[in-house]
Image 1: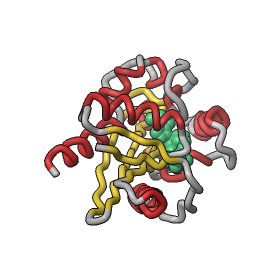
Image 2: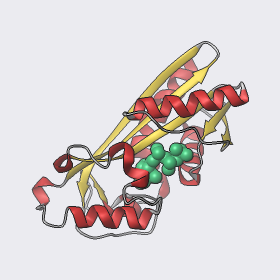
Image 3: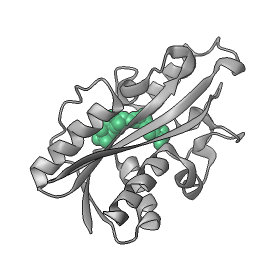
Amino acid sequence: MEIVFATGNKHKAQEAEAILKLANPKVQVLTYSGPEPIESGTTFLENAMIKARAAFEATGQLSFADDSGIACEVMGGAPGIFSAIWSGTRDDATNRNLLLKQLEDIPAEHRAAAFICTIALVGPDEEVSFTGIWPGTISFDVAGDGGFGYDPVFVPEGLEVTAAELEPEVKNSMSHRSMALQQMAEYLARR
Ligand code: ITT
């Protein structure tokens, strides 16, 4: 079964391919990076739906999109849906350095955060969504060179290293994206 993944983010594409290969080997992911629709929604779900609907309309094939980000408790859930452009640029290092600066006076016990990923799946007769939440805390410094985005400043619950210090297979076995895609793979298998 072929399924289109609408994303311009190559890291997301790599992770999704690896996760879905294990979760449902019958699913073949085709990455689509056509004209990006304006993400005018106010939630991960609305933005994921906007991206998935645009891909379905352009390709006519069953399509999914991922809207994701990091939410910090002490910041009321920010950066949230604005994670990719938090500093006003799309540069990962600039974005995570700004977040570290904003939290510099916040003590360890108030640094709770979570990665959130909502996947929207759109086809001719269906519109469904799946969400994964990966809890943890924001570190005081960057560490690790794996992953992307906020991985070097995110310490998953139960671990003492950042997500960027994990092997890709380990991140993909526990991440927010993995939780959401696993649900999508199960949905596709029973459909
Ligand atoms: P597409 O919309 O084209 O898929 P994007 O990067 O613009 O790509 P989003 O609007 O969903 O995607 O923003 C997601 C941002 O959240 C991403 O750029 C990172 O800054 C952050 N993020 C999401 N998942 C992450 C992960 O697994 N590790 C680190 N940062 C992540």
